[in-house]
Image (cartoon, rainbow, N blue to C red; front, side, top):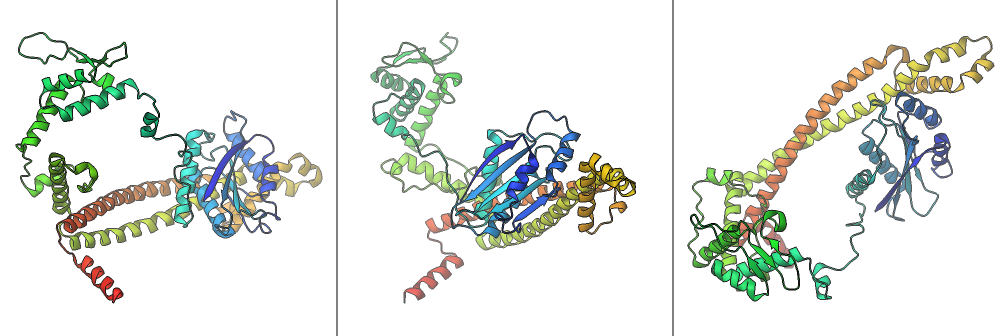
Length: 473
């Protein structure tokens, strides 16, 4: 389980970086990582990135803290989660420093990142929506690493709607009218009977006459509940869909047909079934209490189950065929995922290199000037920050195994554009495969549920049954 919080840094960025990189808190700086900057010169590098933009706003950087439950995670895993969170949140566009502190009873990560995008130079927007996104990413990473997550945070206060009504509070007027209309529709055997039932509930009803030939009638039916002054129209704007007088009359007529057993749902062919939508792709549990003593509702649910199962079998074929198809799909998805991870790694490395090369090119004349200067001390005092940036970027480029003078910023940006195109294609392909795979999972679940209801035993069920019998013996 991890909780997150974030705040802006408006003063000295390097001071904040030095604090989170404290060797006493980070196992001698073993739990320190950075992207597109060096912890020693992060303040200068952040300033340089900010200079490319408009510098609007006072936020120079943001400090994100991710704290884990005591004893739930080791320092190395926590640090890995912190780096993954920074990568997913910032997408390789903002320089950052990630550290993990182990000096307290709970391990916690510090992620300090520049507010300016290294490529578009736009500022990072931090608001409630951003924080919700951070929390979602953090929870997802915790689940991936087998850690607990706070489910539905902040939603445990207050009474349930039923308890609220039980304590004597009145439901809102429109909801009260909707509820009464629905209940009267269920009880009514005709439209006129519906109007009578509503009046028996102390409603004043006006404009109830239905259009009939050329007779002029009111456009909307209106209801006034006992104890209220205003009438409420039976229209989409006031009560929503299904509450006009025409819709109420149609609902009662359909209900009567279902009661009499005269409504027949026809399925012409398997092709017709495939074309019909099955949005829920799950079977209705007809053993639920609401189905007891309601044969019409039970018949409707069984018809829906039949349609859903027919759709699943028409699309998926048999259970073994669908399972084999899913296995092949899973292998394809794993292959695409491996390509995505490799491309993301290349993209991250090139974005890091781009920032280093840009800083190297911008400050090269100061670094070379310092080496050639007759009075190096004076030259260094005047251009200290520029020289530090040059030396840091040169060192970082060489650590990546590249000669600084063999690469240019435009070369690296061209490579980044190529990798972005590849990433977009792979993400789209993976997304399509994942969507299809989830549909197949739903189909398989429906097929197995339906076969179980019908008493059809699959090979998989038979094997599990034999295994259970042998264990009991």
